[in-house]
Length: 259
Image (tube, rainbow, N blue to C red; front, side, top):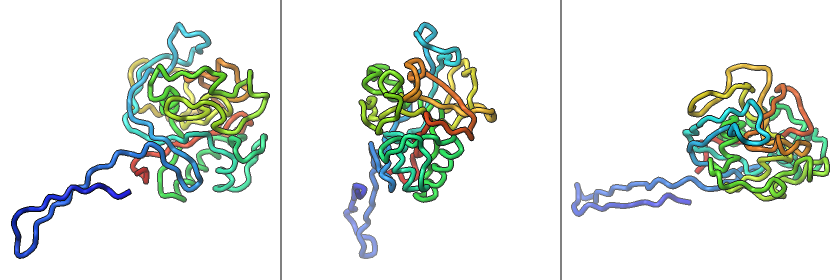
């Protein structure tokens, strides 16, 4: 859609020409965009939230220390986990244990998920990557909206309702931002190395430690208990290790073809 233009025409002539000033009004970012693979990406605004879990919360783990996090830049996040159809369209046949075009791709290592993002970035001239652990939890919590909780059975495929298999993406209710399967179905790789101790104070755009042996996975899977399928729940695995419980969703940075 063309930018709106505000045109001011001066009431005098300069050497026979009208003086015309054109000011381009800045357009707000699109709430949802769809890329060449049919991946829908939703706009996530910048903001602050409480990451981790309160000390009194049932089912919490010791590596979930509550702390304030600021996400300083908006971004786009996939409305669903990457499907087998989307994976195949970019990289060829996948090795998922559960087969189906609309099922999430799984048995994907962290290294392979990063390679998918790199290939898609090159194809489209945009900057795709895995979300950081903080970006993931911020989006899962609907940009920090604590009123956005949906009962787990209504939004997640986990060990009580999955039938020991994955399910087509977007088959249950989304969160308030329109993101599906943030909990359950497949656990999702994040970009960070895992560290057991969160920062003790407020942080801005945390990236995780600079090195480590394991990468973070979030959200739990079809095989997980309710304890793992919480916004604050954390797990980890070696980056080269594929699991039939693990897939991913992609983030696109704003400013790279997002208008």
